[in-house]
Length: 114
Image (cartoon, rainbow, N blue to C red):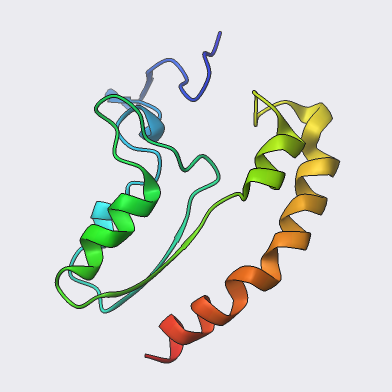
């Protein structure tokens, strides 16, 4: 049984693993120290103790890192509704992502060429 944004912990080879989204919506902090970072965050909002993907990207820029954060627009979020894992929303979500892609292209190219 899963809950929104989190799956139950599992044991693999004697080690416990949990959904990374339980800690962070993007885990962008793991890219600290790199010069160029593209963060893809399908679930980008923070909340409570979780820092949003946009804020995580901003924090990475504090040391001069070039960062592009790709996350769903408001239109895209509406396309997949309250549950982004709902298989019934896949086609609409994919179409919304394709429609949104040109808005991110220039920033990603800028970061990649930096």
